[in-house]
Image (cartoon, rainbow, N blue to C red; front, side, top):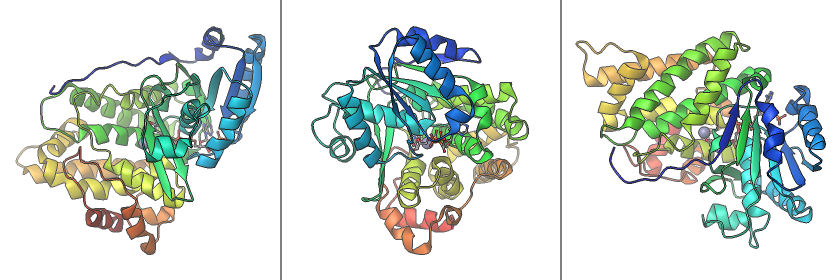
Length: 388
Ligand code: NZQ
Ligand code: ZN
């Protein structure tokens, strides 16, 4: 492990079939005004809305509701929430839903009492929070983002054609997250596999950086093996509790800041994916799956040792009598086959990207330099074209 770092994760997790029983204990730690943040219908369909309302009532809370948080939450929705949270002097924001609800709740928690435009402050100027933060609790029903145990809060501004994530510090992490794998049974297959791929890609974004011997890489290989194994079961048996619970737990650890320790981290698949998202509003995990294979093939030779290790340790490729390039490429082929087996979107055309959008998507992509190759705009154009 090279480098100096600190590690702290203040989110308390409650995991398992009985996890919701712990909500009332957590509610006891906060004031009476609770803002319930949720999406469209899914939490009502699975009966979770009723259960949460009944617990809130039994704890004597004043309930304010903020429904219709959309996938890829928008800046306009953020402004709407700021008014509700401030006017009602909210003590706790309780997010019930997927990563979009949880991200939105964190963005709201730092924006409600912000005296400037939060989009300008947090997403354009990337400033830290210097105002009151409303605590957030999360009840998670969709797996993939890791939002339940991190400080990420991605907001989309359709007018500016920008989708930007601000990774806030541990003062913005959810105070607690409640996770019952059974809530994920009702996810449509499209969302389930998008979440599985989001998880895998969070790991590879961190794994494909640096060349030193680092404990984080060994942890990530274990997480990837578990995820691949359980995904193959869950795709055929969506109600297999063991598989769904392993996927849920892996997803949390993929992006709760632990495995990034000692790593510079890449994140270029996410940067390109977010730019695609800003133009198409496509499902986050699918924006990543569509460009991953072209991206990794493009950069493979710049990080050959790690791609070879990935092939052998994660995809069980037999290295005997093969060149390093062949081993690395076989690993990527195995990954591509697994992605196709799950049914992921493998090209950007399917997400609504047309030829005339390519240059704009490349121009709006934030370029980072923690991975094996720093991309130029022309590289991004080539990768996007490869995914058409
Ligand atoms: O609106 P409802 O009815 O709840 O439906 C949702 C939504 O349509 C549905 N859903 C959720 N739980 C369900 C369910 N349907 C049936 N049964 C259930 N149990 O699923 C759809 C997608 O939900 P969403 O919350 O949008 O998905 P996800 O968890 O993938 O979140 C995506 C957002 O997270 C951001 C993405 O950019 C995107 O905006 N990310 C956040 C990150 C972070 N905080 O660190 C990192 C990620 O890389 C990602 O960027
Ligand atoms: Zn992601």
